[in-house]
Image (cartoon, rainbow, N blue to C red; front, top):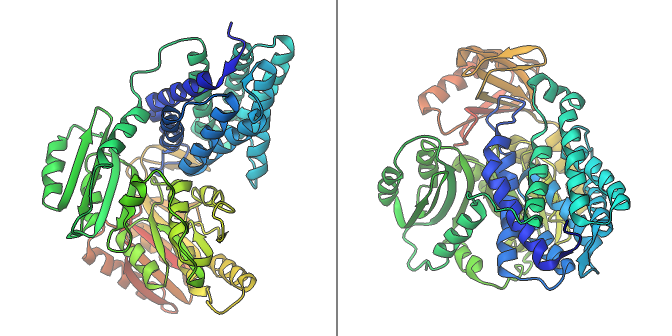
Amino acid sequence: MIDIIDGSLFQRMVIHAAASIAAQKQIINELNVFPVPDGDTGTNLSLTIATAAAEARKKPAQSIGQAAATNAAALLRGARGNSGVILSLLFRGVSKALKEHDTADGQVLAAALNEGVGAAYKAVMKPAEGTILTVSRLAAQRAAAAAQEQNSAEYVLEAAIAEGESALADTIHQNPVLQKAGVVDAGGKGYLIILQGMLDELRGLPAPEVQDGDAQAQQRADFASFETGEITFGYCTEFICSRGNTKDPALLRSFLNGMGDSLVLVDDEEIIKVHVHTNHPGRVLEEALTYGALLTVKIENMREQHTQILEQSDQPAAPALAEKRYGVVAVCAGAGMASVFRDLGVDSVISGGQTMNPSTEDILREVERTPAEVVFVLPNNKNIILAAQQCVGLVEGKQIVVVPTRTVPQGVSAMLAMDPDASLEANVEAMQAAMDHVRTSEVTYAARDSDFDGVAIREGDYMALADGQLFGTAHALNELLERLALADSQQQADFINIFYGQDVPDGDARQVLALFQRLCPNAEVTLLSGGQPVYYYMISAE
């Protein structure tokens, strides 16, 4: 029985945990309770803790306090999606409790786990039961009791995991959506896999052979040798996609060779990682989707920013000096959506959204580069709000204000309401009011058979969401769009904007415009090419 954890062992435990979650991320991804193809909890947790594992390899720690602090800082900057942010919060609390310790026994470890739970609950505005929060809380409570029974780190961690497994099994009964789908909470399961990986390292067991953290570190090392040189192709485009089928990555390499330069493509049995300079990032990502789901995406305009130089530097870039009172950073997916935000005056657009959650570090980087005293952040997706909120207070000399937009149309309306001459309080109030007046409908497809609120949904059906709630399904897309046009939110609107996605031909989009103009005669209807993935149409009504 291992009773004491020192700094070096803690770092090895984190590295082992990263390997464990990487090996099982797809299992977690498939714990979807709603048929929108947004199964990314496993991916987000894996990418989040992979940043900590990479940092642990680079910075050997002398004490467990130092190791935990390095781990917490890396997790915060690498946090992706709600699950990743909550994981970073749990370990931030652990770091706080271990700050003054050289080693940790069972009682110190138990106290740290409970400190982590406190930090997570404090940060989440409306904590729900039947989630990773529930699992972590009950596991930590058992850890505290176990530490009184036997003051051993191994005994405490083993007891916490056992209690967590019971709590996880009960999540199916605590959350009605989970109960309908017949699954346990994905985030809770991922957290227990991470704890189990840490316990396995404590016991000297070998780590899984599939180690995404290692693969990503090696690939970043390859990219670090690039030089931008003469910028013929303007967009530095990097992404990771899963190997969703048997298509040969060599075909993707051939396609990308004709789209730009500075191409590096690395693949293994699970992923394809690409770096390319191109003038058409939308076409690149569209082709990548034919090989598998996009796991991470980053697009930078090299004519405006020398981002790779900043990434290769060991020293963080200094925040841009303020040249104006207000600046804005917005998150969205699709070249058309990005153009809309830039036309409205947004300083920086981060590529992300459904299935592609940017990390806290991704958002923070763009905030630092925005030459303004106050930087508004528009997350434009409910799963990105928490990651954005972690940036607040992290940039010296800049005030970061997160406007909690849950959809791209809400972000557009909030941007339209911003007044560069108004006070901060007036702007926050106006932007919040503007987003609250927007009704957003989204049209996608069902990824699998499911039952939601008594509605049977079949794989391949078209599906509409209205402000995040199920509006209806249909076998025919036009039938569903007609029902949306006749809904109260559209019939009572003065303005309707239709953003069509990357998979929608221009001719089809114009037919939808004509449909809404005919069925919504009292509204001014506008059609815009959003180029967004996942959703065929995003429709805003005001």
